[in-house]
Length: 466
Picture 1: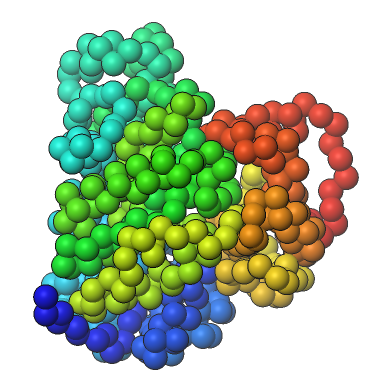
Picture 2: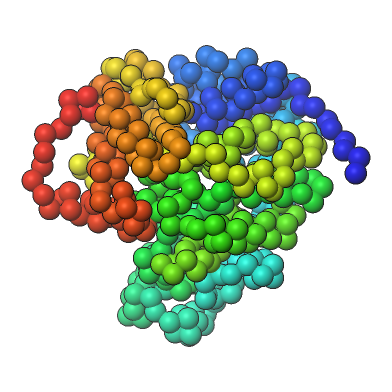
């Protein structure tokens, strides 16, 4: 097949923080000039300092800056950018944004607007998975209507109530008995309206004590698709991930091959182009069920990069330029090491993970063999209160899981942040937790650790985390 490659000449990064830096660095390695947009609150960010060009697109609130489609498109036009990379969050899975980028004559570095629309409605993605022969949990097989009560009874309690356009745990509620159904449904709808402007819901059977397993995928314009080794993302609080690991200590080779085959099926069925993630729930007996497709780069993509050895941002750009995938399924599936990503947030884990914006008085990240830190923070940086609290991603690698945990403990012990509280002490609890060390994790483990922490006497707080 003849490959028509159209090199990109300048890329605008429509994001902030560490992901903006991450994309800018790969662009620089590829010798592609970068433009970054920023809000007034991010005027002194590292992304603004390191990009080739920077354009202020509005005040601090996201809806006046990073969610302002017209401002971002205008910034691309005045700087001559011929492509836009959305990063993750903000507009990265917004079909209207992808469409507007294309209509403006720019390349959207990601899947098409049509694909984002189809997979963005989770009930539609579920139907697509069924047609592709990918296992799904018993559920409503579409958006619920007025007969929702009989649908719930047919599935059998407990059930999960989910927003059709949900994400990040928003618009999602566990309903254990029919007497709770109306209240839980109303709460989920209200949250979905507030976050997504859409209150359509669907039901799924609640899988007890599951693991959250996801598979990174990449697909080009020529019918080629590959799936990488899985990430175990079970360590969550209120459906928000705190730590990701690859490969999963629970997944064996046979199950891994089945997960990768299922992920490729759904990607090919959707006509997907670009890098994305297929998420699954896995029961204690290793039975797994399709959940959703994230049509963007994930926060935790460095875990997969460490294990597979490929630059996923570069892969996104190559696909957007019209290149064929530069690797086979066998190459993508190879496991080079074990890796963990610790999300270091500006939060007080001793007080319900309350956000802790403020000035970073001292910043000394961990280092050494097998350590990568993706961060936009520096000494003197002021963490704004308007955005996500992520400060850094500490990615640790080692030849096996035992060495990996030892290295994680060492890194967390030397990672020094002064002036604000962070989640580092909580990560130290995780890597010393007997269940986590043994690989006995599920999506409820974090809440059990928090419950145990709250029931025990408070220890002294490390001065470096104040």
